[in-house]
Amino acid sequence: MPETPSLLPTTVVGSYPQPDWLVDRAILTKNNVVPRVRLKEIWRVAEDALEQAQDDATLIAIRDMERAGIDIITDGEMRRESYSNRFALALDGVDVDNPAIVSGRMGKPTPVPRVTGPIRRRHAVEQRDVEFLRANTDRRIKITLPGPFTMSMQAHDEHYGDDEAFAMAYAEVVAEEARDLVAAGADVIQLDEPWLQARPEQAKRYGVKAINRALEGVGGTTVVHLCFGYAALVSDKPSGYSFLPQLADSTAVQISIEAAQPKLDLGMLKELSNKTIMLGVLDLGTNEVETAETVAARLREGLRHVPAERLVAAPDCGMKYLPRARAFAKLKALADGAAIVRRELAG
Ligand code: MET
Image (tube, rainbow, N blue to C red; front, top):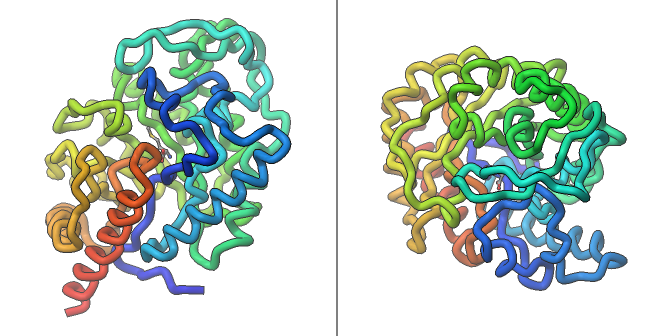
């Protein structure tokens, strides 16, 4: 097994471009909304061959990440219509067939599932995904799950009647799933929580509590990812987070943030001095492919605020909306840029 470097390991936020023979990418971007309900029409392969096609696409994603030189890889989220709905819609208590319409993160009307009864997990949802990934790479592996806070914002509560109780119900099922995924071989579990930043008032009230419940008893390396949204969907990004230092009180080992595209002021990272920072050093909002030197410069900037022992190099967010060739080239620049800085550190 290739050894994971102890300094500046590289990873991805999760998703990699799905092949055009697998999904109709035009549908994904047509309305500029990330599906919260099912979006079966994106699949271009018939139901009876879909799992096999998703497996094959996953092998491509794995090999691309390996070839680019990424140290901690994912399954590329090839099996997902969105980063969250594979897990969120597999739960009991969730009515997927009669969506409610709510105002989305960007203020657009968005169909979301209704929660009409207690949220329970029927069975492990992403276990086979982890087993498949484990069986097909020697590298360290990570799997992502939507976080409890974010899932509670992507559904309409008609059962709990209290926003905190609603998020905590999601936290329970995430914890069960995360423990199963570690048992299935995941080295790293990442909770995607972009809504913490979009709803800071509620996040400050119970965001950390929900995350800590979701990570209770979860071994392995734990990560919480926050971003301002996919670059393909959100171009105007603030230069600072409305919710972040609070995560110092979370039990997550790593905090994943986007920094390249928003040109984030990294000064606030001093407030997360007990966390490893997964730093976004690939801007996914530009067609340009970074040079290894640009990546190295961004990592050196990170090192002014975070010691090398606590820095992980990553893209700003998931790469699913990029053309595959560009995603690959950017990952290669990420790996090469991290290698440059690693050599400097070794003196
Ligand atoms: N894991 C997800 C991805 O890589 C994160 C999405 S946050 C909007 O696409």
